[in-house]
Image 1 (cartoon, rainbow, N blue to C red):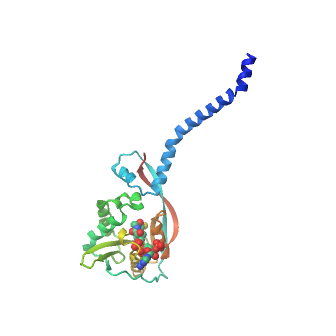
Image 2: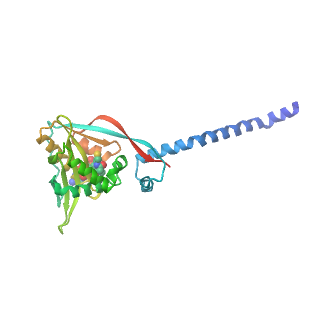
Image 3: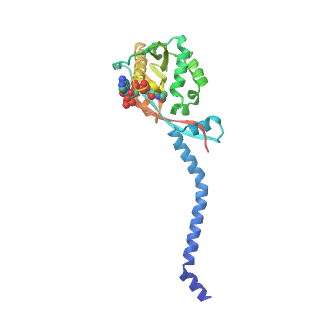
Length: 249
Ligand SMILES: CC(C)(COP(=O)(O)OP(=O)(O)OC[C@H]1O[C@@H](n2cnc3c(N)ncnc32)[C@H](O)[C@@H]1OP(=O)(O)O)[C@@H](O)C(=O)NCCC(=O)NCCS
């Protein structure tokens, strides 16, 4: 018996048994932890959402549902001292104030601008033509709708074809606050000053109405939009989290 025990100790069998137990334990922990890790990875992935395969799966509803949270900045700028100069738009670009005949152009433009963007994950209606149709009709018939701060940008090509390429819509909020609803520029027309022009036109419209503050909300990851707003004096006044139902693997 003593000889057997001596052999067990000297042969390292105890160390091996301990090692095997540890590995098995870790395996069990991993077994339980992996689904959580997978979900966390999906969350991170959705936050950096650019994978069309995932998007297709989400849209088809073939995956189980769960909640994810998008960080959003509520931004504000005072209008009292606002006097930014307008960028000079490249040849062919024009802007038009709101007119009900431009409704379809705004809808199409909104859809082309938001489809596939981060905000289409936060607000799925923005990623669908019928969702943009509903939203645009709803905004333009709301009580506080501000036609003079709602603009369409269009590109007129040399052969005379007119292509709507940017949209901004605005509402009157409470008191002397205005609220920018959506601003979007169709991808192939970005980086030309159209977003800036539309934003400045809306701010000018608010000023003309005697409003004192402009508000908006933007998804924190939408860095292009955040930069645009900061450039024209918007600062974050509050950070909120929007819960969105998404599908997990
Ligand atoms: C955010 C958004 C509206 C910006 O529109 P845009 O037309 O590209 O905006 P601008 O052209 O005015 O500004 C974009 C950049 O081009 C630059 N730019 C402007 N005019 C330029 C010109 N004539 N030549 C070269 N660059 C120019 C700007 O300085 C800016 O640079 P920066 O991002 O490095 O600061 C657009 O990216 C978009 O539609 N995104 C998807 C929808 C969305 O998320 N909307 C916001 C919801 S809150």
